[in-house]
Length: 210
Image (cartoon, rainbow, N blue to C red; front, side, top):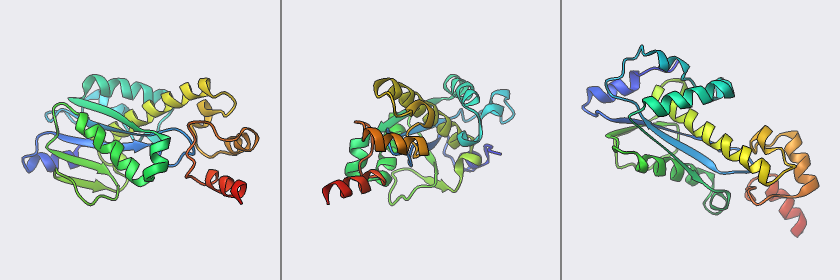
């Protein structure tokens, strides 16, 4: 269960404002990759009742995520959400796109953090003290809060995309490569928000060009 232990370690080192950052949408075939960054109050009571709704965004229901996101937005010291669009994902690759989204979110935080807790990413340089945490959204409440905001924001985008590009089922599968989504791709071809560098879209393009 996520708690504030990792945040407290940074606090003990003199880093008062600790931001957690995480992404949603690394694997889908369509839509942006979305990242959020959250600074929880440094004097936060670890037993505060509202913290009980926060957990790894993948382990809680959509309804609970929305409730948790509302609580995070009202209780956090600062939060920000940023997106990298499919065209840019195709251009720079998903790994760099994830980092771009994460650090864009961090750069939008006011106040700026003194240290970062990141769900595991490949990182060569960071201007702030940081820690990469394997399965960070199940260990750090700051990372878990960021994962929830990112997931809720991205899901809202994909529900809106379902209205703009009907027939793909974006509201249901959120762009992931489900059997239904693959059938729709076969029947309709890609939409403007599909990631052409991702298999199977890349394979289909190669077959067309052969």
